[in-house]
Length: 263
Image (cartoon, one colour):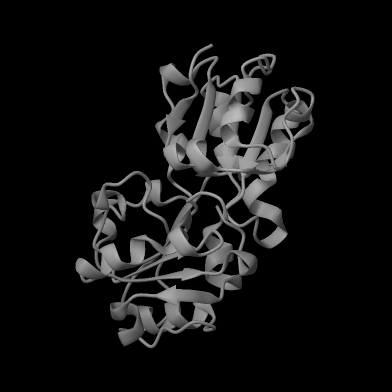
């Protein structure tokens, strides 16, 4: 029986993921689910990212049912997001879709046992076109900086340095490489805390680079949607450079963005 393929981010899925059971540190939103399907995974275990507003952290599980892929999510309280090996070693399932249930995979099961059972999952149907994952750049009236809205931090460009970057991504480091924290030295970066704890792991790393950064509470914004981070999010944690801008827990993210744009 082959071991599951471990991917700290589903964006790294390549040919090796085809027909494999994949355990990924990515949240279980629809875009992440679509990437797993496009990569040809047999079945996938995601992170539930605190479930969050409108259950966005597990929204991909039901979507994958429509394409015949068995999928489950690990409880954010049992393993850190972005850490596939930790999920496999100690994660407990919080949610499963119907296709996974048919394989005997149920909430409360260990991730390791789920991965063993999912080897028997039938291969899913062909992948549809990927849903749009947006990158929008604007300069609001009266602003001194550009506002960059990216549903995934993977869409940050080097020339976003010095700008205000709002992402739909979780605020944890995936893997153990601090270089993954952000691709540009932004004036401010916002993330989703994916349920807290490890979901704020980028903040001290970015502070060491002099980058103001904060997370919004998972229950206040849909993970994977930058616009929701910006307009719906409420700050849950911030680093010292962000605090110097006036950031504090309980502050609407839109207010912090407004301050940063005016600097």
